[in-house]
Amino acid sequence: AALFACGAGVAFAQDKETRNFLFLGDLASRYNREVWEMSIPAIIMSILIAVATSWALFYSVIKFRERKGEVREPAQFHGNNVLEIALIAVPFLIVTVLAILTVRTMVRINNPDIYAKSLRGEPVQVDVLAAQFWWNFTYPQLGNIANGNEMVMPQGRAIRTNITSRDVMHQFWAPNIGGQRAAIPGVQKEYTLDIERPGIYQGNCTQLCGPSHANMRYKVVVLAENDWNAFVTAARAYRAPVPAPGSSEARGQQIFLQGKNGSPSCAGCHRVQGLQGAAGLAGPDLSYFASRNTLGAGMWEGEAARERLKEWILNSPGLKPGSLMPAYRNVQTGKSLLSEQDLDDLEAYLLTLKLPPAAEYWNKVP
Ligand code: CUA
Image (cartoon, rainbow, N blue to C red; front, side, top):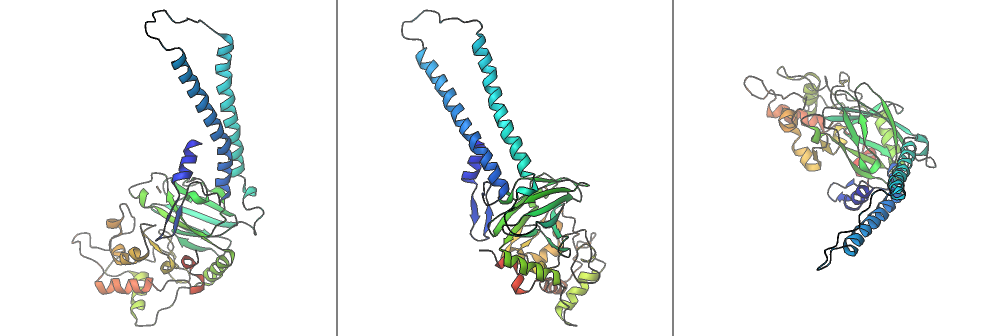
């Protein structure tokens, strides 16, 4: 409890530049409110115990200290039934009260009915896929729209996450919207979450899962109801734009779909909604890649992400240890499989993959 209080006190941080919230005790989410309510009696008990035991300690030390010139032996006691029963009963009582509080809270935070019950609408289903070292968020009730590494959700409405992993154990944790949730391969775990304030919240994998565990981050972008509706409408209707024939973007699309100089294609591993032949599920969804603000599962944001895009395409494992995306280099010679022109074309194409302005979720948060 004391740890939680300290965390709540010092862990509030909002990066002005990236507008990220990271706050363990954010009371805008139901989960955190439940934990906080449990913590108050526990904190009070901790303070009372600390005061009582400190008092007993200092009282004894001062009152019964050896005074100058004193040589007598202190009083000796053997056995005291009342004291011994009390010394067992009191801690037992304390632990029982803490256990009741904890179990009660655990039952409540795992009960979907308490989340956003009085708030708008049915819960939104989000399938969360964790993989080394990225995230995919799919909305099965909303036409299977999907986004990689940025989870968009509505404010003040419960979301029901269905969390699983493709490979090893990961852990889904965006402290503002609730506690850590394990992502276990072969297991689907349902959890409900909510938050009442729009904003951008930091999420991290919190289970050591390989060389880029620390680079397995995500954003939770919480939108006001009308912005959320605009996002869903546009995302459902989204089709990857068709580049003008002969343009740089068209050449980029060609490389995206088929690779070049024997390199693997992007489409083999990445899905793009509405693009024939781009249905790969081995990597994060790229449907509206250019609407995202992060690159490499949250390794870079904003300008830094844009600047690294070409380098990322060329040599992802060089930038992110353990990344399964191949380096576009000849293994023997180390020579790039893509020319500077190819990279420009590919970048130009990727930057066309974006939502209409009305649905650009990153611009909608305060
Ligand atoms: Cu995934 Cu750590």
